[in-house]
Length: 219
Image (cartoon, rainbow, N blue to C red; front, side, top):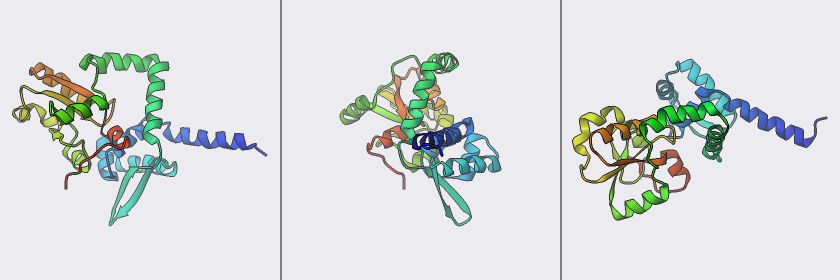
C-alpha cells in the first residue's frame, strides 16, 4: 500500500496535470476578472465553445474554478484558495529558470515598456493625494464586474479615438488583467508616443482584489 506521503504527492501531481495546458492558464486569467459565461470565456480565449467547456470542466474538478447555472447559461468564477499566488509562483519560477520565457519578456514586454512599474503601495499613496489618473484598459464588461476605485475605463481598442477623455497634464497609471496582460503594455507604448506621462501597475485587477484592497463594481 502506498504511504501517506506517496498519496499526497499523487494528489499534488494530479493538480499539476490540471494546470498543464496553456488554454487552462489563459482561462484562469479571464475567470479571475469576475464571473463569466462559458460563451464569453470561449470568445475571449479564441476557443470553440466545446473546447472551452472541456478545459473548464478539468479546472472545475481540480477546484481552480467554480460554476453555477443561471437558466440555460453556465457561469464560471475563480475557485477558492491561493490560486493567484500559485500562478504567480509559476510565473516567477518560469522567468527564473526558462531562458525562452526571459527572451519573450525581453523581446516583447520590455520592448513596449522598460520603466519600473508602479507598486500597489505607491499607487495607494498616489490615489490618496489625487496626483494621478488611474486607467483601466480592459473591455467594458470586465470593468463592470469590478475595478480599482476611481478608475477611468478606456478599453484599449477604443483608446486612440478617446484620447480627449484623458487629462493631458497628469501622470497616468494603467492596469489590466495581470502582470502579463498585453493591453496595459500596449496602452503605455501608445500613450507615450502621444506625449502622455504613463506607467503601469505592477500586476492587475485580480491581484489587487486578492490583496483585500477596495474594489468598485459598476451597477
